[in-house]
Length: 118
Image (cartoon, rainbow, N blue to C red; front, side, top):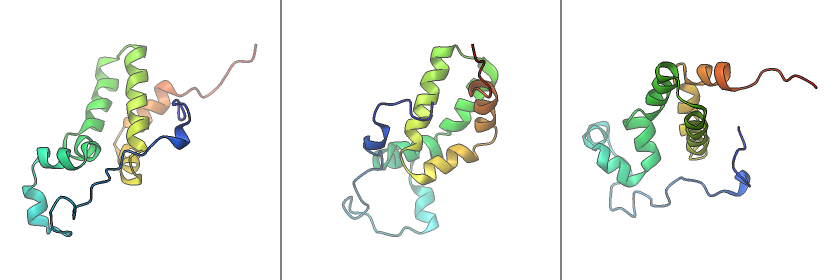
């Protein structure tokens, strides 16, 4: 599932091209100003960062996988979304790995550990 997309190595990254200077914001924000930034502001600047860091998409995915036992099509789509999110940046990939229980559930339930030879 790791390379489920065609020519994944040449796919464009999701990291936004707009920099803080282009948006007219100061380059470095102190912690007080970062806390005042709304979810909509973060989503406007970087949708993936907003989904992962502000809207707890990874925790929601873990809950769906644990509690709801979705159909195979849904699981495949969720894994494709996670793979595409991981392409965004190293920090988002780290957040995916760091999310408590998410990778454990994926490895235990959806990654084959042995193959039968026929």
